[in-house]
Amino acid sequence: MMRRAFIALAAIVGLSAQAWSVELGEDGLHKQNWFSMTFRDVAEDIETAKADGKRLVMIFEQRGCIYCAKMHEELLADPEVAEFIKANFMVVQYNMFGDEEVTDLDGETLTEKTAARKWGYVFTPTLVFLPEDAPDNVPVAQAAVATMPGAFGKWTFLNMFKWVSEKGYEGEEHFQKYHARIINQLREEGRLNAE
Image (cartoon, rainbow, N blue to C red; front, side, top):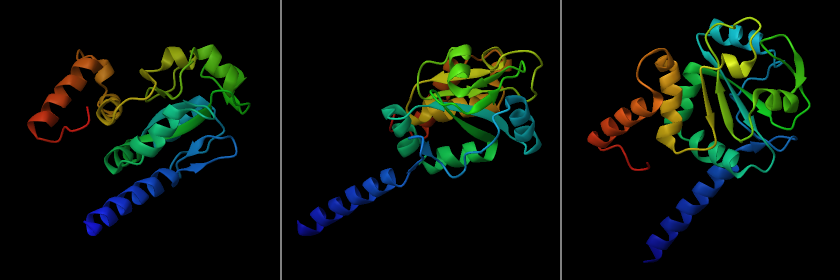
């Protein structure tokens, strides 16, 4: 009995340590050491990602966002999720209420908060997936190939990254149908336990 209690306590401490291991920056946002620090020139970031064989995804977050914390502590802490994203995407973090300078694809210079307002992003986290090549004179919101507002479970989150990576937005299979197909495959494989 004592042994089981000790194992349970060790598991709780281990999970708590994992959750606390995500660093908080001075801006109050959770940080991943593999997120890219850039000058937030979106066209330049798209080209940099492409040169590395990746796609650009922008993540809008805000201080105190419990859903952002969940994304970092649960989803981005999951090795399967994190490894797929790191291998296929360059991630740049934006503060929805931040003052860092941003250059939109249409050339307009903004702050993070005015960019979020211009592009219509009101939820955190919001993930914005950009095309492989930077279009000219089009704002980010119009150029985005997919947008995911809010926090979701592991498979919805990971499947969106996979769907974008596979260019599902160019085909006939809508993300919801793609996601349902993958969920059914996971269920058949006995891997589905969370969604």
